[in-house]
Length: 259
Length: 264
Image 1 (cartoon, rainbow over the protein chains, first blue to last red):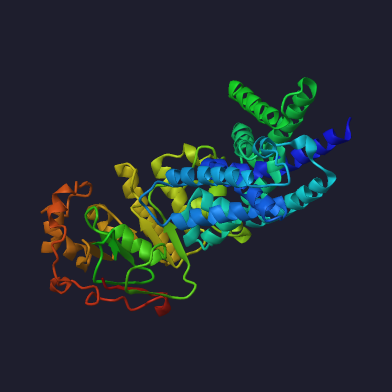
Image 2: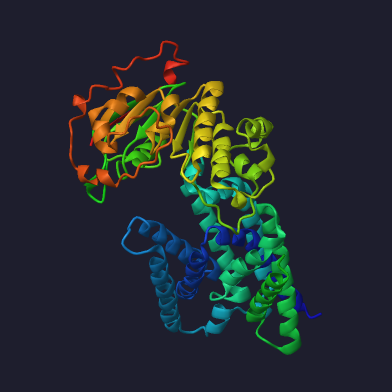
C-alpha cells in the first residue's frame, strides 16, 4: 500500500475515533445545525490563518470559538429562533471566509480542499497534530462524560443536582471546535457534521447504553472511512465524499435490517 | 419578578420547614413555577432574597420530562445520573420504596406517565435530600395513580424527614397530606391549613365554591379565573398568614429552614 494511503487511513481513523463519542451528543442534543455552523465558520478560520500567517488549525480554532461565543451571547435575545440565528452565522462566516480567501495573494489557496477535504494530502506532521488532538478530546470528554450526559437528559435537573451547565457546555463546544479543526483536512468544512451525525444515528439500534452507542458510532465511523477510502482508491472518486456516502450506505443498511 | 415587562410575582414571603409539606396552588399563570424556579436557583428574581441553608441538598421532580428517543437509557442509569458512585448502594432500596424495582432495566422511553413520575421521584430521593421540590408531580398520571403518588410522597417524607414543596393544580387530592397550603395568584392570596384555605373567600373566588370534603377526586378547569389577573389584593387581609399558623415544636433542625422573601 502506498504511503499516502496509510496516512489517509490513519487520519480518517483518528477522526472516526473522536467523531463517534462527540457525535452521539450532537444527535441526542439535536445540535446538528450547531455543528454545521461551527464547521462552516472554519472557512473563516482558514482565511484568518492565511491572512495573518498563523497556523491554519489555530485559525480554525479561533474562528469556531468566536462563533460559538457569539451564539452563546445571542441566546439571550428571544426574537429570532436559534435555528435562524445559526443560519445567519453559518452562512455569513462561510461567505466572509470565501471573500477573505480571495484577498490572499502569493500562496495559491485550493478552496475545494478546504470545502470538501483533501485526505490524500495528509502529511506525517499533520498526523502528529491530529494524534495530539485526539488524545486531548478523548481525555477531556471522559472527564466531563457524566455531567454532560446528565445535562443532555435534562438540563434543569442537572443544574439542581449541582452540574455546572455552562462550564460543561463550553468544554463540549471547545471539543467540537477541535474536531472541526482536525477534520477539515479529512472531509472539509461542508461535510464534517455528517461524520458526527451519520455514524451516531446508525449506532442507535445496536446499543443499550449511552456508552455502547458511542463505541458503536466509532466502529461505524471506522468502517465508513475504510470503505470510503477503498472506493476512492478503486474508482478514483473524491475521498471525503466517498467516506460520507459510505457512512450513509451503512446507515441505510442498518435501517433495512432494523428489528 | 417580571417576564417581558409583565410583573408576574410580587410580595411573596414564605418559609419552608423540614418534615412539613407545603403545597402551592393557584390558577394557570399565577407564577407557581416561577416561584419554584427561583427557589431552586434556576431563575433570578428582579429583586428579593432567597435564604438557603448552605449546601442544602435539594431533590427536584420537574414536570413530566421527555428523553430523546435516540438516547439509549435504562431506568437504572437515569436514576444514577443524580450523583456519584456511592449512591449506587442505595439504588435497590430506593427502587423498592418507590415501587419501581421491576422497571430497573427498562428503557425510559417506554415508561408510562405514572411510572416516569416514580422514576423521577426515585432520582430525587436517592441523594437523600433535605428538601424535596415537586412541580405538578401528578401531571399526566391517571386519577388512581395520582392518589397513590401523593400517598408515596407523604410516605417518603415520613421515612426520610425532608421538607416538601409541591406545586399542585388540585387542592382536594393533596389535602389530607398537606401541612400548609399557599394559594398563589401573582401574590399570596391566602395561606394556612388546607381546611382553612379551602374555606377562604380568596380561594373560593379563584377555584369556585366547591365543597372540599367528599370530593376526593375533582379536576378543575381554571379558565374562569382569568378575569382576576391583575386584580391585586393586599396579602395582609388574608387571615391565614403562614407566620400565624402553629409551628411544630420538634424541628429537626432549625437550619433546615429555607427562607424566601421576594418583593416585586
